[in-house]
Image (tube, rainbow, N blue to C red; front, top):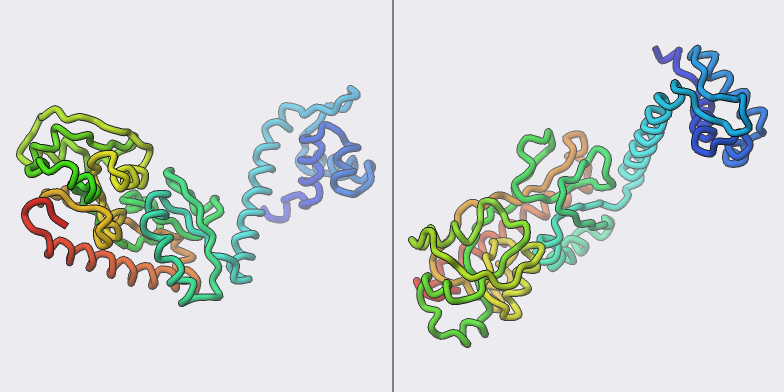
Length: 315
């Protein structure tokens, strides 16, 4: 079958003519003569036994066969280019490209990233954020960090931090609201919402665990993600559902306090994922080992804060 594949130059000529609708412009783009382009396209048509262009008008148009084949040829070029770029980056020790949720990037990874650069000065890190699942086969990323989405996607998965959810507010908000002494008191306060809440952590779940099922609570400001919800709580706009990784530093520094000993358990795990064929790349191994150490420190810090908490307006 490989012997029957046409030369790459003929496929490039076909794609260029189809895109520009001109043999002349395709020749200029590929820096060859118009006759060379015409010869390459004719050679491709003869090899496949298919007519690809209508040549009986001044405007070059694709035939029905050409319309069917064009997206296939383009996809082949894109796949080849993506693969070569990825291999070149790996071979030349290119940057480690990390895609993650914006909330996790801002609240957890970025404050710790200088320690990674100090430990591995030869590894440059490029960060990008998105809330959708990233396709590591096609996207420009080596690894991704996601919350509880990676178990069945055929990727190498490293669990980092198990998330719990609980009510948090700023110390100033608590000081200004001294009657906030029991879970039922939250019903008189604005609760910060996210537009895409975790299905495993909602205010209804929290009130159910507080033995107040079915109560009507007051919504305050609504934001797009959990990171913004934590920021809204930090500046005193109400009470938010904090998640372990996103609030552990603010709890330890006293910028947030945990309200009551009510925890929604096992919201999910933050996972580091990569393609199985790249899991042993040196830069990925270095980042994984460092992440695991940082995650263990973060978990231990959260557990210590829990032990120090009282039974009231805690941490």
